[in-house]
Length: 358
Image (cartoon, rainbow, N blue to C red; front, top):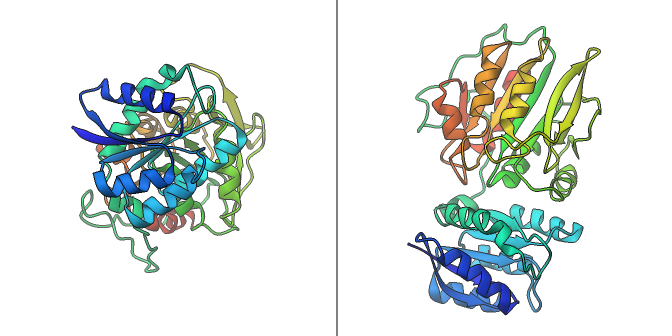
């Protein structure tokens, strides 16, 4: 049974969160804390497997507490956040600083309707409790050598490049990710050149209200442009488009140009946006070569879409290796299809993408 420390300045929220987490046989709440300072002292004393940490607290807020936790007593952390613009920005910052995941409180700091997200909270805290904390604190260096080094757990040797692959076709890059995705995306997007000769479309599992903050933060860090995707906009090279939370994002070809199509179709395997739906839409693009990338995340989203992609047209697939994944779910499932061309550590994925751009 995994041990949890619950950190929230509201006694009511601490009680509710504790009840939800202990309702499963997988989790035991071994302590509570009312602010960041209290949390750090109790982490050092109790050594929990995972911490739930409220973003908005007096004395020391969740962001400041997270910085100190990662520096002094690293442990997997799941943030609890409000869906205000400020709350979304702070949550995205927390993901970058090392939080494994977050749960959005349905109605603000004191959410009387917290039961709406009980199942999601339990699932994410259980998943975070199994994360190797060294993967959160390590910084992965990009290699500069020309020869790709394939993740040893998944592939024995690098695959040769076909000199004719995609030579005459314009290209589009597709990326799917979930738990641990914001940090993984930061690694990938900041490693790509500003003159990238293709657009990128990204599905990151996030609820409405958070994807714009993620796009804005990444836009300030990467050489390429990063923005939240909008319905009907034409894709341009050197820009990454992040699917908005709460809607599906498709790429369609209209009059010789690629455009974004947003839809409110039912969630696919519990996700909206869904990587499968993005990949499936791209499989219909007859005149483009596609580079599909599957990064860290729970579950199997993207695998069925990858199968569709590979059934037609020119496609190369890259998966993040077990060594660097916060959660080796989505990449593992993609690799199991036997359709992945390269398995790479996160720091090497930009180089791998660029290998296919030549």
